[in-house]
Every structure is written in C-alpha cells, then in structure tokens.
Length: 107
Length: 122
Image: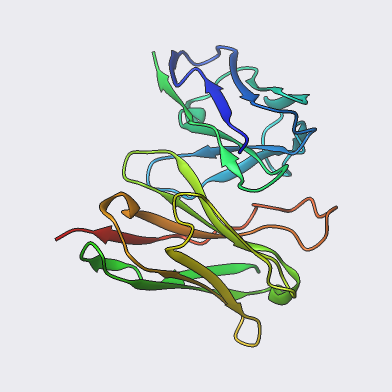
C-alpha cells in the first residue's frame, strides 16, 4: 500500500501568512493526487486535482505542485475562511490513501 | 444537480451488522466508479471501499476486507455497503463519493454525500 505522509499535522498561522503543506508518497504516484479542505461538521471539499489543477471556484491563493513522491499545497495569503483541516489523497492505485491531515489554526 | 444521499447508519452492538445505502441522482450512476470513505470522530479521512461502474469490480481497505461488502444496483441508482462483524473502531461517519466515469474524468471527488453516522457500542 502507498503511504501518504503529510506534514505538519497542525500549525498556527496568522491572516496574510503564506502557508505550505507537504505530502510525501512512499512510492511514485505521478500526478494522481488531490487536496481537500474540511471544516468541522462539513463534507470535504476538493481544492486541487491532478496535483496542480485548481478546482473551479476555488480562490487563486490556493495552489498545488509536485509529482512523483513530493507534493505541496500552498496558500499564498491565508484568509479567515481558510482555517480548516487539509488532506491529500493519492488515487494512483488501490487502496486509495489519504494523508493524516493538517489542521490550520489561528495564531 | 448531482446528489448523493446516504442512509442506514445508527447504533449497533459489536459483532453486529448494518447496511448503508447511498441514493444517487443527477448523473448517469451506472457509468461511475463509486467509493465509501469514513471518518472516525475527531480523526482523519479513510478510504473504505470502491466499486466500478458497469462491471462492478470491487476494492477494499485492509481494515474492512472480509467484513464489508460493497455493491450497487444500477437500476435503482443506489450504492450499498454491507457491514458485518462490526467493531468499535468502525465507528465513524460514512460518506459515499463519486469517482470517475473515464480515466480522463477530472471531476472526481467533487461530489460527496452528507454522511451517515455508524456507532458501534454495547
């Protein structure tokens, strides 16, 4: 099975900060990676697909990069509505695996 | 409009069984691979199981293989998850999610149900 190691697991940041979240795959997955945002009590929302493609309607401050085994989600200027938990997901092969999540909290 | 509506969750004793359903509408259900994803209270997301559209090939996470069975009824636009030999660690919100219709489909995981809570406790 492919392990997705996501870091950090939690972070405190201020409005306007640049935030970077990383996912590392235990083997190459090409660009078969998506990023999700989840707020408490809500359904996950897809932000990025194919590692770097921005979901329609998602603000351009979100971006994804990487391929193979190293992937990054960047929020260029953190906004109040961005405080949430973020997950990566590999869908290169079965079983699909999520990263452990990164909780972004207000500093 | 794509809609996914789960049902069937509830309280069940350890060792018991439960069947979840996910009613789909607004798209050609039979063309899509569908998944179940779960989230234990206060924990992260875990992919549970998947089934392809027309052929019905199934896939499972190791944690549920041999206990859970995914199936679909394309005539009823409904996805199922039969859960047997339930354990406390199966307690979670269970979501159904739409994956792909073709390998190039870029809309995967855009559509999720609202989830149904399964609690395994005596």
